[in-house]
Image 1: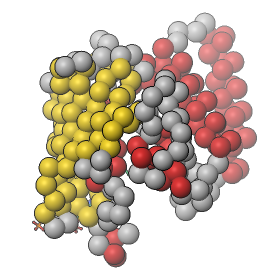
Image 2: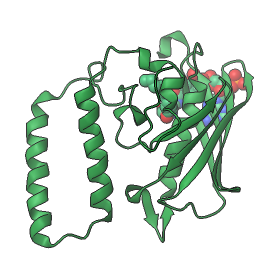
Image 3: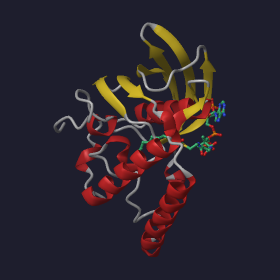
Image 4: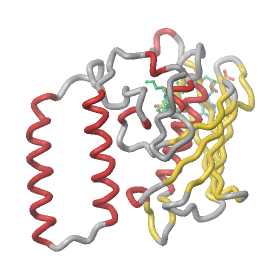
Length: 211
Ligand SMILES: CCCCCCCCCCCC(=O)SCCNC(=O)CCNC(=O)[C@H](O)C(C)(C)COP(=O)(O)OP(=O)(O)OC[C@H]1O[C@@H](n2cnc3c(N)ncnc32)[C@H](O)[C@@H]1OP(=O)(O)O
C-alpha cells in the first residue's frame, strides 16, 4: 500500500487497498489532474448562479476545452478515465470519492461526502448517486484481490432517511455469502449512528468467455 492520497487527510482510496495502484499501464498523472479539475467544475457549476454574461463566457470556454480534447478520442482499451488507480475515484468523474479506513478482503469501512453535484432536492443526495456509490463500493468488494471478475446482477437499495449533502458520512460493505459464482454483499451508508441508506447486491462471477 502506498501513501494516503486523501485530500481531506486520512484514509486511502479502495483501489490502493486492493493494490490496483500497482497497475500502471494507464497511469497518467496529468490526466488525473484534468479529471480532478472537471470534478471541481461539476461541483462549482452545480452550486452557482452566475450572471448570464459569465455563464455564456464559461460555456464558451468549456466548449473550447471540449474542442481541444475531442481529437484525442480513443477506444476503451486505451482509455485512461477510470484507470487512474493512484487517485480517488480512479479518474472517473461521476463517482464520489470514498476514503477507505479499513479493508480486510471481506469488508470495507470508509467515508464519503456528497457535494452539490449530487444534490437531488431539499438538501438530499440524489437516490441515483447513492445507488452509484453502493454499486461501486459493493462491486469493488466483489472484485477483491485474486477474486474472479464479477458483475452486478441486481442491486436493491433502501432509502431510510434523507442523506444530507456536504456532510461526511460513513459507508460500509461486506460479503454475506458466496455460493458458487454468486456473491451476496450488503452495504450501509450512515450519518453518525443513523443508517440513512442500505443496499443488498448480487454479484455474479464471470466465466472465461464473459471477460
Ligand atoms: C477496472 C478495475 C475496477 C474494478 C472495480 C469495479 C467496481 C465497479 C463494479 C460495478 C459493477 C457494475 O456495475 S457491472 C454493470 C451492471 N451489470 C451488468 O451489466 C450485468 C448484466 N448482466 C449480466 O451480464 C448477466 O446477467 C450476469 C453476468 C450477471 C449473469 O449472467 P450469467 O453469467 O449468464 O449467469 P446466470 O447463469 O444467468 O446466473 C448465474 C446465477 O446467478 C443467478 N442470477 C443471475 N442474475 C440474477 C438476478 N438478477 N437475480 C437473482 N439471481 C440471479 C442465477 O439464477 C444463477 O443462479 P444459480 O442457478 O447458479 O443458483
